[in-house]
Amino acid sequence: MNDHETYETLAAVYAVGALEGDDLARFEAHLAEGCDRCEVIVRESREAMARMALTATPAVPPPEVKAALHARIDAATRPFRASRRGWLTWAAATAVVAALAVMVASGVVASRYEAKLGQVAREVAAERERLKRQEAALRALELLRDPATRVVELRGTSGAEVMARVIWNDKAGGQLIVANLPPAPAGKAYELWALGGAQPRPAGLFQVDADGRAAQTVDAGGEPPKGFAVTLEPATGVPAPTGPIVMASR
Amino acid sequence: MTTAGEDLIRRMTAGDRDAFSRFYDRYSPLVFPLILKIVRDRADAADVLQDVFWEAWQGAGSYDSNRGTPEAWMITRARTRAIDRIRAVRRRGETFVPPVDEGLAPAPPEPGGDAAERAEDRGVIRTALETLPQAQREVIELAYYAGLTQTEIAERLQQPLGTVKTRIRLGLERLREVVRRAT
Image (cartoon, rainbow over all chains, first blue to last red; front, side, top):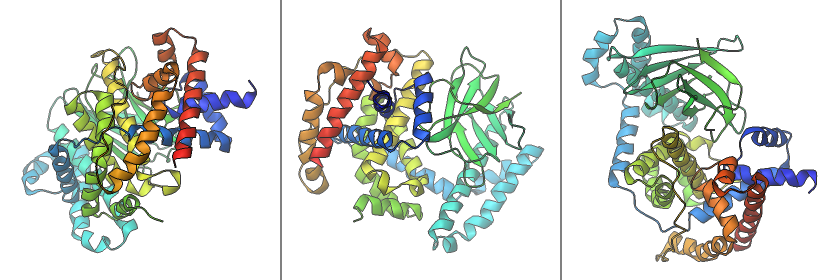
């Protein structure tokens, strides 16, 4: 077996998501050097597996899913609801919450102009990102109503101004809010880890927008975490951290 | 040429909810069986499906037709999210790795349009997977549908790691070849 055949084997294993550890690092370094042949193998293998999956008999999913999606889009498009106003005032008592409320208020102005913005696709995409963040802010506010919720701060390990907060509730889960994080390189994503159990628990993959911001829901589960960390990983995610730590709680 | 699916994705990028609704109607019956096959629980599968389409709505702008069809885009997304779900459950120790006991169930071709087109190459491609040597098919299924890593597959089958990797390569070479010929 010549040298490149080894990479072609790794490419196939990579394409079905089974590559890990040193092999994964080695293959990704090879891809990063710009190997067209391996890229084609990965792409064609994934496409072939997708075609294979599409040979299954189509099945109509439960109707609630579509209804839930429409509700979710509605919620994101109209982030400010009268019923939330009462506890918004209440919540404004703390500094963290006040900052979030500013984001929500700016959403009121933003949504008023949404019809106009809708004419320009690019602007609407940016708007949707912002609405997504507002949805995250509302969820964070909801979490903060519970006295058991805590706010965990994550700092960049490189000393840069990267920072993130996880608003965490052991029962309800959490909300990750990120600022000043550079976009992940192609084929990579950031992965959040809940620390404190025997091993770090994967708590979700995320990407940042052009301004380096992200907002993401974190599911509850596992041991109550003692802290969180973010690493740079392959875009499909990994079950245990392999990449460099980008930021961590103290 | 732009396919109807690509057109819907482009309209979704512009925030067109009607396009999203049609996109959902078109692709959810295609990706739902895969999610169900992986997570094996209807309620979990419905959750994953919702996340997959929510991400598609929010990430429509990232779709690149040079890198694959809308079907492949959605299938890849669905597979990734479904595997995330079973890996998370497995790590919490709530379940063991289920055996991959079902092959790909035969699908009766259904009449009309897209579906008929798919049914045409479905026959060829399904046969391709079935004609793979069992040893190659098994490792590919354990990776793709059960989300096992190469080491986990080697442990489970009690085979050397190198053998597992080679089987995956050989199996995929054959599948790629069949897809190329069917296209």
